[in-house]
Length: 408
Image 1 (cartoon, rainbow, N blue to C red):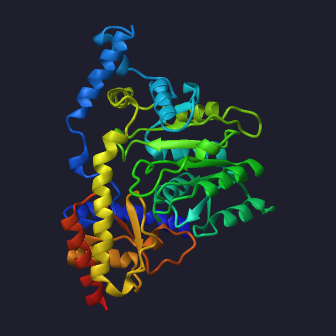
Image 2: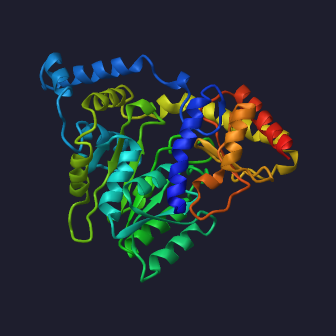
Image 3: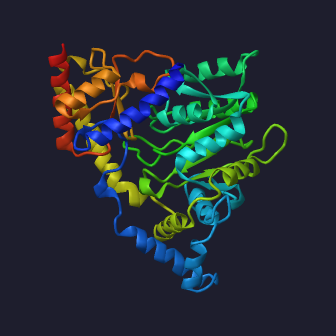
């Protein structure tokens, strides 16, 4: 069995473990807290969308609601709303015709792998790598290669792009803002270089901007798409983290062309029509209502969550320092945002340890090796800090450290 297959197989095991230990302190799942989900917002936003559409002359309330119960355009029902939203988010003037709505970021990955990688090319990513990309590549049979996600990441990318005699790189996958799993932030200079490499070697970049709004420290860095002049960057923003995972909605900007001159948007829409036909019009309407209510600016809406996660990040660093006083330099790196932090406890921690730790002390900690195609990282873990309070962080790290001491 290939390492890609074995890693993809570990995902269901981890999900089953999380389900079986639903009351555990869970450092594995990067999701918003239940308390942050807007329980009273969905019906309000839906009603707001309906009333706005009726006001725009698209029928009365009943007619608009019936429209939401029908099939919608493959590329999406709310592309104009999303274009305005993107235009407010330092992406310049966005043409609605270049926007596609998908069923979460995961479908966006599969669409782009289908069009840009296919059966004869590969997707290139940093290692350790986002688990969802591993699952998509393995499940659908797309080629996936990784290079070390270290200080020389772009050097490694360029070396692979320049190699002949191997499958061409059809797509580079990147999470520039607070990467999952490493927590790294890509500098503006490196973003410019990555886009330039895509231009030079005739490839595309999938920019996963899912954590972009969760910035705790420093100034914002322009998105990759802001440096794109040739349509090389597909900018994708999922609303699972900023609004709620249950919406299962993401949006992408794809304004480029393929090597044969074909419109990238046309190809993506064609695959979308075969894969899922459309994204639920009801779900799209809920998101459009929220965007209208917030004047196309989600920053104030997300701000309380950002404050909560920053406190959790700080508390996690403090708890690790207390539980592992000789490993104070082992947080790699202290993330300036996002949902995840990587840590080296100084001893190996395997997936078998994840299982035993859950059984013995009711704490779920995933090894970073679970996210690596290249191997290594046996002494590192990835700790999610989004879905808990500070007391749970203290308790969970204390119990995990106790497990390690008892294991010896």
